[in-house]
Amino acid sequence: MKEIYVARSEQVAARLLDGEMIIMSALDSTLFNLNAVATMIWQAADGCTPLSAIVADHICTEFDVPLNVAYRDAEEFVRQLATHGILRVLDSPIACSGCGHLEAKA
Image (cartoon, rainbow, N blue to C red; front, side, top):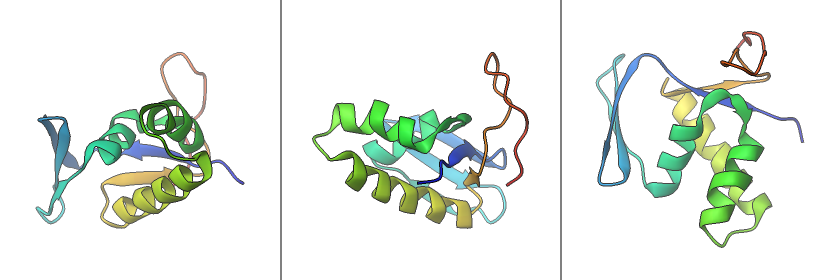
């Protein structure tokens, strides 16, 4: 399995409300209401942490779900949000404070 990295788009407005993230696309004003699991992914999407680590460290520790199932669902979710310009799916990590990675191409 090839690692993927996810980063939040800078062209959105996002607010946490009662444990769920509300996101509005600046491109077309579409509103997204993320459930608790999706909010965990959104908050951890720093472009530096691989999606597999986000799933293992956040989702699988919080919910009783096998890693392969959680990863498959998370990958589908991030790719769907990427089609709306809400998340960026990357082949390599972007520069993060302290991690030393270089900017990745989307």
